[in-house]
Length: 435
Image (cartoon, rainbow, N blue to C red; front, side, top):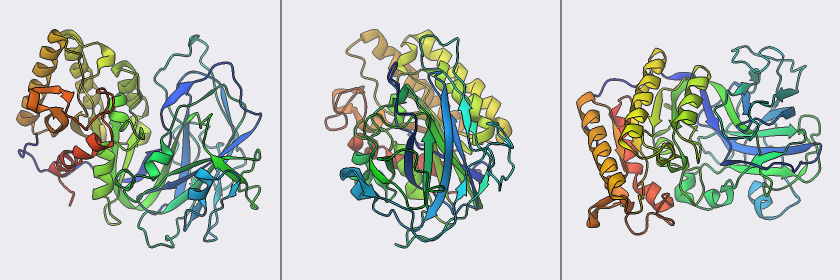
């Protein structure tokens, strides 16, 4: 459901844009990686950059050492696609652009908008949380490196999205990422939108390209995938819109790849060299608003969202009338706090809520969805109503998925997410300022 009561301009465009790089995060207690492990992420960004910084977080309270990191522009993906299926493939940035070592001495992990051209301090430790004895998922604050000079170069294939090669070397760790779905994402042109993303692990240890320009041989991300959580933030001369999404696994992305959410796909379709749109997904599977709302509060100052797509309904908080009303109240308090950044809101009902025939919960879901849509119309706030598109409307059961839109009747698959893209596009356009 899309209303047309408001067409005022979107929130201010940002010279600072952010995208997240990690997939689903899971702890792996009591198993250590080698003393050094180096990772390479090849990432398309939506606008040419002139400075970059990296953000890290340890969601489960483990101690983690970032030994060093560097970032290099590239005019191609090199042989990354081969490395995903053929371990030992050499992959290096191409185009000859100078990269940058990532430094930490100016901000020491805090959000400091200063440019570091020296990078004398390359190591940073994410401290453990002693009070989190069970290593439970909890809200975190991103630790940011300093901004370091790094200028994009044009793509050799003419694509409008510049490429960054991001190298990260970690000390030993006993927590890792869960399945990232990178291979499924890259092999699905509909999901990838021409923006393939690669995550590779060095087959020889400690080979940061800044220190070893001969490069390393790489293998697929494999098990264990990369952790801690990772973000790249860049400064651009072409200010764009920053979308930040919060929610649970329903907002993370389809079950096929875990990352290409409908709002991300819509943003990729609308983004252009004249008006870049960057998407940062802070949704976290298995959590509720007590975690993902606080995540946004903790990191809003550094992310500076133009738009927040907020999932107000989460089964992980319990599905009672009181819990749903509390979710809405928390969201409104959060968004009121974001008003100082000019942040706009889109209510996002990202998927169905398969309630296993529980009559009481079904009535609560129907009432809450109706009230949210009515409130959106009254206030002129866009609402992405996925159940109206991929719900089992033929059976008058929008809380269940229509055939073909879910593989587990719990999460949307890639077909379900794609079916919602038009509604997400309309919601973004309703805010104004977009083609």
